[in-house]
Length: 119
Image (cartoon, rainbow, N blue to C red; front, side, top):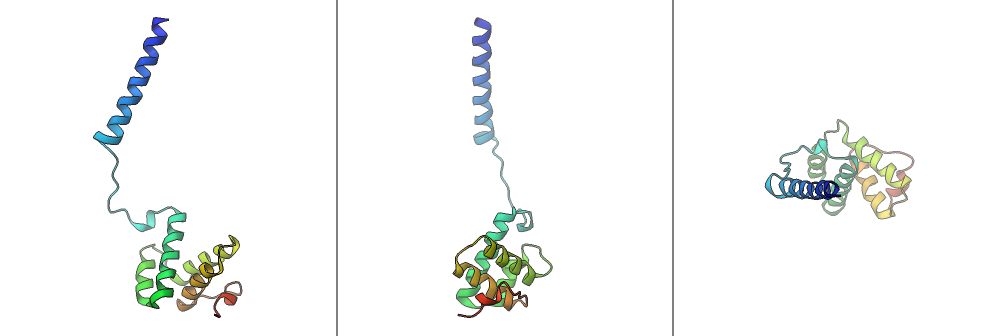
């Protein structure tokens, strides 16, 4: 019985010390990570934010700068694929419209996104 109690106390103490060391003494810090290393859902958010900014200010050069950080060769196709994904996910019309208009401004259009280009 004492052996089991000792093992449980040692286990709890080990987990506690491990958490303190991992969270407070030597926490993991990520700095200067490239946007190309983001998970796809975060890349989708970045594309959406670039589309929102473009809808607000119509600054295509700034939108291209924002999107170039994601590492895609064809920015228009990148945004177009996100717009088509937004249609498939049944996202709000305003969301899809912003993405479709940015894709069109970048020279990428499709039959699925064309209805979202008109006001």
